[in-house]
Length: 121
Image (tube, rainbow, N blue to C red; front, side, top):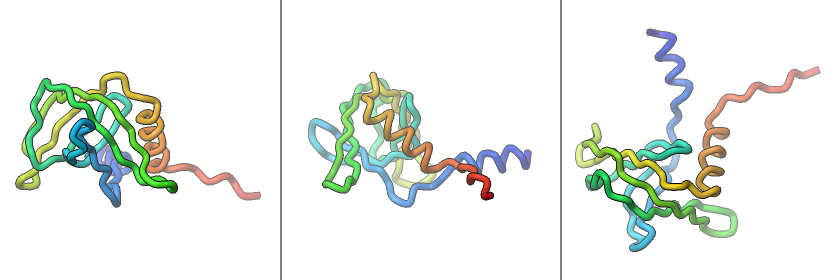
């Protein structure tokens, strides 16, 4: 049990900033990413999401030359009340994730992974 807890704590990391998710059509904020994978994401929002609905979404990621947009479509698979009062967690599966999304997930995975240091001579 203690080993499982330890492994889970290594795999989970808190982001110091939240990546916000926007409705691509209206440009209104929908919530923040709770976690991501190549297949989907968890959205933390103030309003519940409609399960079964397909959403056109946009991530706005700060870049050196302004903002970078990652546009994608996702279907809400589930929605439940968050442990934080007034919040909701929703699971989304991506519909044909674009290359930019895949790159972002890989970059986050690399950033939050432990890497061994090269042996010094």
